[in-house]
Amino acid sequence: MTGPRGLFVAFEGGDGAGKTTQLGLLAEHLRAQGCDVVVTREPGDSRIGPQVRAIVLDGGELDPRAEALLFAADRADHVAHVIRPALERGAVVLVDRYIDSSIAYQGEGRGLGRDQVAAISAFATGGLEPDLTVLLDLDEAARRDRVERQGYVDRIEREPGHVHERVRQAFLDLAAAQPERYLVVDAARSPRDVAADIAVAVDKVRP
Image 1 (cartoon, rainbow, N blue to C red):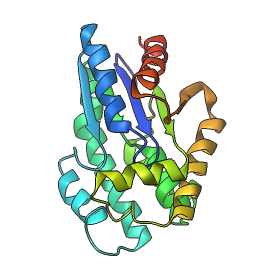
Image 2: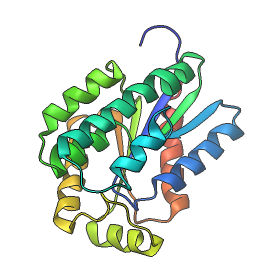
Image 3: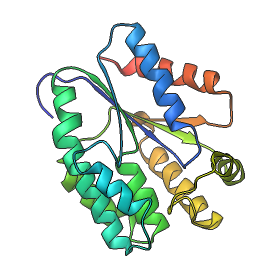
Image 4: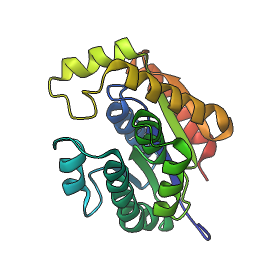
């Protein structure tokens, strides 16, 4: 993206890692400083998001390629109509899941190939990358315990533990490949301690 822009922060990690909680705490921190903050999620907050979410998370079995392409279509609309306009007016955009989730879940978890899924997402977003990606890392036993305590488990959350382990490793590999753009946080710590580390990292990259 060229010209004036705000700040783009993506939150990644397995289900149950605390992304929703941390987005809320960071938004609270930034708004207290007078920032224009947009909190959004994938899939769900694009114009086609509710329909995509119903199919990929709450529907029946789905071909892995169809799943990846549905996520990419949602992301393309999300970037065009929510994320880019907010960044262009100088807002801070906090997104719950972005490209890394597709690479980890569909590329690795579904076995479609990380590079192939990354290419689809790059096309969908026009190459828009976050300024900072916060990876909330949680081991599989703790992650599953949190998800089961939530009650409802969606179609992707029902995948066996070994699939979620591969997904976790894919997230960690992505972070290791670009350490300057990632903050990896131990999500087993208290939410307030995690939030404090995230706030410090975001304040460092704010324009």
